[in-house]
Length: 391
Image (cartoon, rainbow, N blue to C red):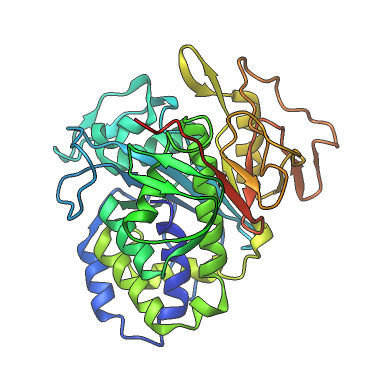
């Protein structure tokens, strides 16, 4: 699910002009949904300027899927929710993951089943119920409410879509530091490098029991291993000069996902792609939304979250806490060949308000607290497996 956004914005930039796009444009337009712009005008090709906020939503629905992905849960949850921010000067990109079990407030949302009517706001509900409650537009509105950011672009992808996109890119090379054994998803990987595509890529992205401490928080850090490897591959010359792969990606995107009407245009995707394509790997930062884990569930860790979101909105360079050496309990990923990709703290109470001292923020950069975990796309990381998924 997390593969989709970067494929959309990178592929279009290099496919238009060298391949026929009429079929791609038609499928993209057909698979679109009107959620409104979410604030602000939508740029056209050749006239793009300013920041981009794009929400990626991964649905766990089994309805209408070609593959067999286990029992139908009887509901449609946004199993993955990720916000991509491209800075206004187009030198930085942030990929912000929200835990599926995060408790949030949901604003009043337009009712997709009854145009012109609104669904009532909700307080203290899991973020992954918003897709079922009010459609992808409600998920967007919830993230906008949580972050204070306007989000005009949304992409929704299903399990089938992940399979198709990973096939189109030719697989993603993923490092596994310790064997993954998860009977729930059917994923069993030995330690080493594995090129994952199709159903195997989906199993890797879905596995929760098989990595780290078996929680969704460590699943996110494992997913970042896949996403950072994907970014490196898509931005490599081998992919960007392969017309067959580019067309396959663009076509798979149009066929396998639902785009907001604001995004469902080749021109718009090219405009966005031109903003993201030049960004260096070290300026792609992948982070988790900071949380507090307690007996009451997973809730926002307001101090670090405020520091992080303010820095993202201000287009500051995000500086993650120093990398740890050795293993950490519950850790979902490690830097290839050594230290961990980021600390894996388990806070039990809210962190203090962010410091306003020069050491916390200076010039273009912000030093993020240790409770903000993640990595850059330049870092070669490996997932840490376990045997918790054995049944």
